[in-house]
Length: 193
Ligand SMILES: [Zn+2]
Image 1 (spheres, rainbow, N blue to C red):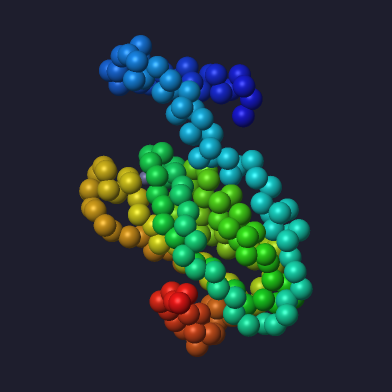
Image 2 (image 1 turned 45 degrees about the vertical axis):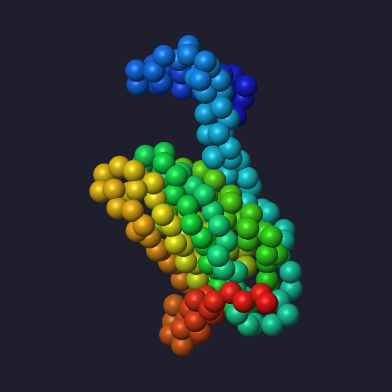
């Protein structure tokens, strides 16, 4: 975002606060437009990350065609309908074909796809699409569990409800026993002792 755009955004946020009946000259709100503009830029920086290129550059030759699982990676995003946060965890399971991908890069893919205005369903598909294109795996499954502030704070105000979305590709669609095996591993308790 250019400096000029950032200044315009700060002005608009100040105007929005005034429309909400706030006295934007009071000390507590003095720097709020600047802070909110910076926060919004941070929450949407995923738009600037060339994640497809990054993913393709971090491929490594696969040593086997066994399941690879990365579970419980946290994410934070903003719902595109209300600009309210939704957050939770991403589980990734894939069966390599020719390549594996750096685990850190999987984290970058999750961040790039979640740090923008999103819907949970689209976030799940975007992560799957980027991995599918870069890796061409034999099978792929993405599961996202999330809580949405637009459900907690407004509308139906249901506390504690969790939304689960899933995207599957390849033999994790067609082979039920393989999918079951991946699901069991994803549900296994963590034990680092
Ligand atoms: Zn929403």
